[in-house]
Image (cartoon, rainbow, N blue to C red; front, side, top):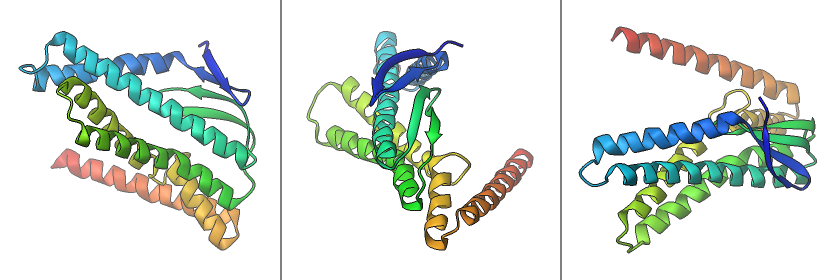
Length: 207
């Protein structure tokens, strides 16, 4: 599928796959449907769709913002990026040269989760101190904050190419001096988590 290029940062194209627009619609529909079910007495159909679309758009925009910060840090640590393509709830970077230091990789891996937590904290603070009578705005701000918290914790899970996996691998590399040891422990951790999830699923199925 053809990808749509919206802008460039430091000469790096930021592209959007059609799936990104599909997830925008799906999130909007899902949130508005939840509001229709749980808060139909408060919000009408148009208001629920407004909340759904605004929440989804701002949340996905925050992911773009996080990726922009991630790009700046990556470039500062010697990474060469050819382009960045946004898919569902994240982006895939086409890398020409990786960071060559453990500490640099730790910094890069921490950017997105920390950005999520900072955005969530700021939005929750705004929601808490706001004396606005417009409940729709507060609803949107709170939902975007919660989604960023969820995404931040999700990114810290030490699995595969997630930031948590890169972070675990790089920390072990930093303290042991062995890049291969970091990869080995990450692979073992992935195996343990996979087996645990499988066993939990079986137990849940039969109970």
